[in-house]
Length: 283
Image 1 (cartoon, rainbow, N blue to C red):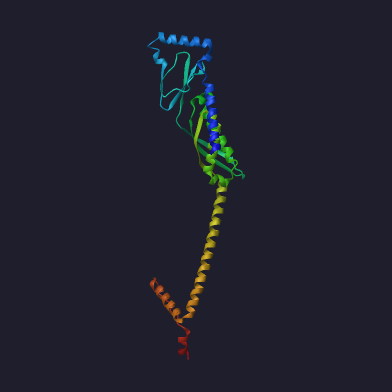
Image 2 (image 1 turned 180 degrees about the vertical axis):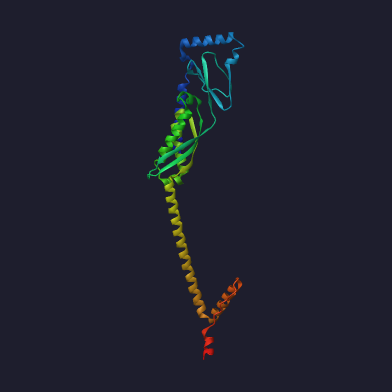
């Protein structure tokens, strides 16, 4: 945990250094720049109150505004939410949405470590953590994150076997989230969650796996049946030893069998007689 905390602190310090480097003081615009700013302020004062509609802007609760003055990011970083003030002609701004964004990773044909082709798709949840870096360091953070998610999915699944892909989805999702979060840190993007939605196997492989599972179940059923027969034979052996000790026990068992047969819907009952009873009539 100490090493992990150190890595997080190091990343945070680097992010702050990059942001401070972008937010340099306004004095760097030079004398000509200050002259243009002064002219812009004078123009705003001369056109009051009409110019007030061009100078006051509003951003919503979930948005932040990055203000550019003569092409440079204004000191103070992102503005908002609420009201903020810009100068006409010299200032421009870009709104950045800070809400969590969700997108689906298109199905990717991946060759696994054991040379099996599977089609895997997923979903990624991310949000803009630093609006200044998201505007200044990359052209389109959303498109870049989507492309990077597809590439990361291929790279991570290419190092896994088919059994690992089917059973360790949570571990794969966590590995993808960590990789994406590290890669998008310079863009001011925070990857919150990654999920593997579906793993599609080729039809022939599905049939082979189904046949293998069926054969496994049949073998297990035969083993269970054989164990049941063995237990039944042992019980019958013990019962025969008990009956052999008492001749009347055999007769009681015989009568119990006749009672069971009579309880069913049968019209004919075969009643065997002992041969000892017939020997007297034969003589």
